[in-house]
Image (cartoon, rainbow, N blue to C red):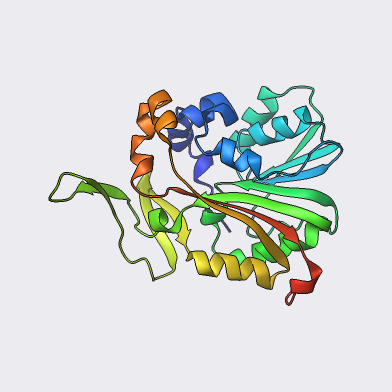
Length: 250
């Protein structure tokens, strides 16, 4: 079972203060790049895994999605999501993504934002996502970049010339990391980029696009707090599509 740290009152309060928590997609630095990877949503059936406060679910409805389902392990997150979009045609369900089995062949798009690095068994998760997609369906997701996630508590240092350098440690050892982020002992899982891509392809998903997101000069001018996101990649974005010719394990 995945750790449900978001229902801890202190953690939830701390997380709620982030810009992306308050402002939704507009406050998420990587959103414009992730948005560009999405297929047309008009008339689509959409599943959001790790929906959090429901920002993407609301966006999908605004874009004309015919059916939107948001899944999260946190009851506090789901309660907040329902409160932010009363009356919208969105269904929210509480479930653990380590075990949740979506209905087979049901969705045109499965979306997940910054959730998969909390999962111990990525291979099983991707297999369930693959089964949930319609023929030609898309799986678009973001995760903590492995360079960032490899070190339990990422930090920046200055080299001899005064340049900011991201400290990376134990990159080649995949597996569990305990990080002190908002609260002590938050459980995340580090896996290599190669592992991530191979898992997707072995499950029958074709990699259509990949981006190691970074803040541009314009981003930093508008959001000075994003400056550190220029020194090492924090987010890895991927867009995939169901390709039965690649499927070996579904």
